[in-house]
Length: 310
Image (cartoon, rainbow, N blue to C red; front, side, top):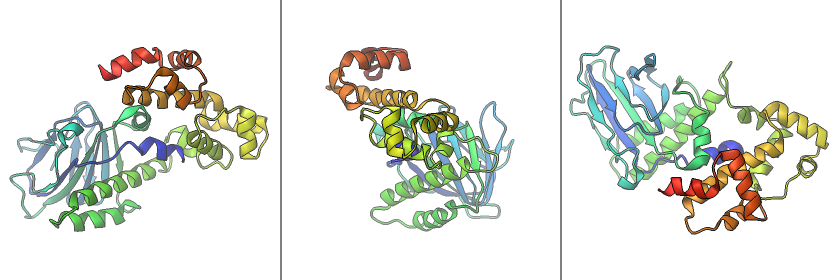
């Protein structure tokens, strides 16, 4: 399992696709919930993503924009549009309420006249500390132009949203997940970009293998020597290459990753004892685990659990 697999695993569409609509200018859709992550893609036409205190971001046919919450944003036909904003996406960021279901033509003034724009939007809840690491690696707004690997997904989306068939919600959710993965890959790989250190490090034959081992077997009794042996290099070589590419020593990275996993266990498994959580992430006793957790997270495991479930 690689780092990206782990971080994006908890970011999944589940009944949270707003839908698609053909919008005739002037129009303004205000996405009101401030979902942790919202993906907007245009099949035809274009518009602008407008957020308070941020420059407007153009969105043209084939482009995809990913917007981080919790700030809300508006999709408009043009900056300074005369259209009155229409609130969209109520409950999209509240999974327990089922999310906003797919529907065609959510905008009452939809049409297919000259200059019409066809928009598809998916809003994602971000569950747990693991997925928040991915969120922290993203800017407030990122845009990926058309012409990349996401174009094939757009073709599937365009065909599916025109239908009304059983199982459509599941298909649309998975297509939006696919589109999100394609978009993030292209953004991380863009020329001159500033991808997180772990993204490039995954492609190094030594450090990438070390990261895969740490993520696949986080509870193993790792030492730098043991990890180096599994990677087929010397201890000194692994330590230097890992620190150079990831920005910290391998065991420091492992401790932070274990504490991230532990945080999700503490919040999600309410009946698990501290000793059980400790063993799951590679600690033989609760005392050593608690000390490491407080050192990394700034609070004790018990205090973290109380705040997470309170």
